[in-house]
Image 1 (cartoon, protein in one colour):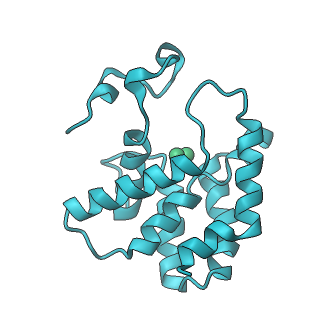
Image 2: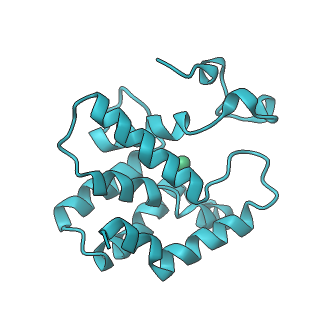
Length: 160
Ligand SMILES: [Fe+2]
Ligand SMILES: [Fe+2]
């Protein structure tokens, strides 16, 4: 089993995702379940391939994408920023799945940066996650566009 598949089977990952699913049951905006992680993983990796930035391991990109929002449930409960919490919760999971300390640092930085956008010195993985996070959403058909703080006309564009 690859380390990413191992991660998805880890009991803590499963329990965090379960808490998020429960807390987002009534949420009208985008949810942050498994499907969101998978979409972000695929889009971030495609973006890096297109840029010919192949320095990052595919496993690191996928691991970061699956873990970038795992702290959402803590944010719902305490108000703490989920980028920071997700990085904190990701560390023991990555260690348990035998990611190298070098890869872990890259992944945790990417997770911490995933809410920031271009122009403020993001790492390559942080930039890919931040873009993929927006591109993973179907804003065009969203029924709560008018209420969403993230929504703007540009989010209807599917190609850049
Ligand atoms: Fe997020
Ligand atoms: Fe996200």
